[in-house]
Image (tube, rainbow, N blue to C red; front, side, top):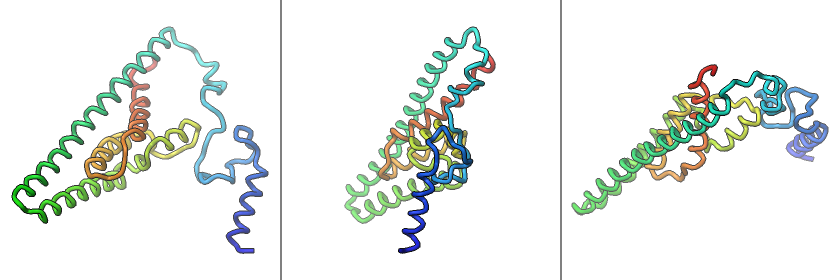
Length: 201
């Protein structure tokens, strides 16, 4: 039996002995990929602290007001992202077409490829050195975060800024990325920020 198979077999046996999620007796769980990180085994809304907290007089109004503000801010962010992205794509296409009209096919290809590569490298550099929490689509990270996984830098200003400009640069650089997942992550960051706008009301 190979060592890899033995390790896999031991992993399966260990996982089978673990209780269901929500009823852990061992901490941290040994059967998941994030055993180096901490997580909660319950939803915050089900906690005793949340259920027995004092409910403010205008809490429902503030809650719905927060939804409106989040929607407006996320929509505005998406609009700004679209404008910047369209401007970069228009500039790239215009300069490429100008070189083609001058019959400089090689120069047009070099400009298009180098400008796209520059935008992609800029996006990667921004993510690597400024906002590493923005790596990935954002959907999986938010799902894990809402389930209690302590995923570092999921919600932060550098993550928000990097997600906004990183996606714009990546899309304008013709990388195979979409905006739906990142907008969910951007919305989560905006929502977390909006929670602090109303103070202790």
